Image (cartoon, rainbow, N blue to C red; front, side):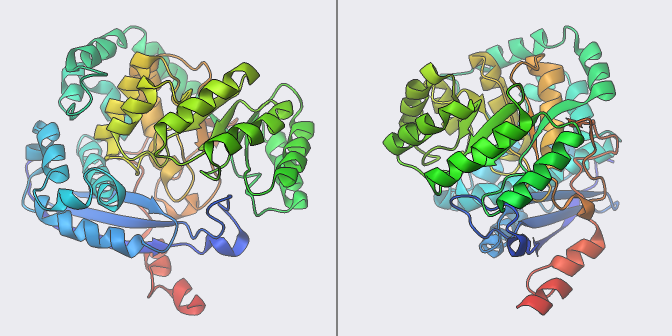
Amino acid sequence: MLKGKIVKLTVNDVRFPTSQGQHGSDAMHTDPDYSVAYVVIETEEGLKGYGITFTIGKGTEIVVCAVEALSNLVIGKSLKEIVSDFRGFYRLLTSDGQMRWIGPEKGVIQLATAAILNAIWDMWARAESKPLWKLLVDMEPSQLIRCIDFRYITDALTEQEALDLLEKGRAGKQQREEQMLKEGYPAYTTSCAWLGYSDQQLTQLCSTALAEGWTKFKVKVGADLQDDIRRCSLIRKMIGPEKSLMIDANQRWDVAEAISWVTKLAEFRPLWIEEPTCPDDILGHAAISKALAPLGIGVATGEQCHNRVMFKQFLQASALQYVQIDSCRVGSVNENLAILLMAAKFKVPVCPHAGGVGLCELVQHLILFDYISVSASLDNRMCEFVDHLHEHFQSPTVIRNAHYMPPTDPGYSTEMLEGSVLKYRFPDGEVWRSIL
């Protein structure tokens, strides 16, 4: 199954009109229409791989163009050729002599790279008849290492250090896998407190979540301080003093403003402030981290962190206390492996970003691998969950007792229902014809 050449790559712009209900709204993104660039690759034998990258509406068509521009680097290669030198293929995809000028390894070009590589990982897992997390867990450390491009990060993590971490992770691996299959990975919910929700809606959703067993809640903040105080007070009173509360400003503030604002919210005992300032401002995050440490509030970021190099610098500068990987922002599984291993070396917990369209489906595989094969710890660790749009996937996320249950279907959980793709394809799908 690995030998056949990839002969076809298609990509569609699929958008969901979530802005109509203020779902996903935050201080910077007030009207998101959750969307994906949806890639399907196919071999001459008919084996398919499905990949996505997440966007919030306008601009998805630009990602589609970037995928098409990179497709010539994929078509004609066999899956075996790619995965036997995955590091080399990753570098080929990110280092085209002309295309890299509009990156390199960041922005639209990296989103497109992620969509393509997610499809290749999905195809590989399907070829091996395993869910992606199990494919990763079963790999030899040396094989995992060969999937990672260590260029630009060896001053923080060498190949040998990464290999040592994976070798160390072998101890107790079978027990941790059995634990995950039985109990699942702890999750937190963001679905209750989008910024555009009314207090009544927030209260109703929080009550339902508590009844379902949720113990960790995130609140969007950053537009108006008095509103934030009221909403955080409301949530804290509802969930009580023992449950976890996180806050997320989605890049709204300057550095000094972030410190001042969060200090005023400290009475609600947030575990972290997420994306307090520009996502590229590593030293700004470091200053915020230092200022908030005496209050017991950590800094979390990563959902808009471009690549492994930025994560390296965030870790080197002690600029974050929670690493938030994203399955579509950086270069797919390959680059996230590097980030997970750097986080392990620096002893910083990984709490992935999810939600959107398909992000929960994808990132659950990565966090299961992290626990089973790398970190071996659940201390201060949790994975975001947002209850949106799972019904459009062939293998939707399964949540039980506020835990992600490990997927069992082969692949990366990336395949969308064909009917959903046709209905929500932009701009000619049935839904958009009725809106536009």
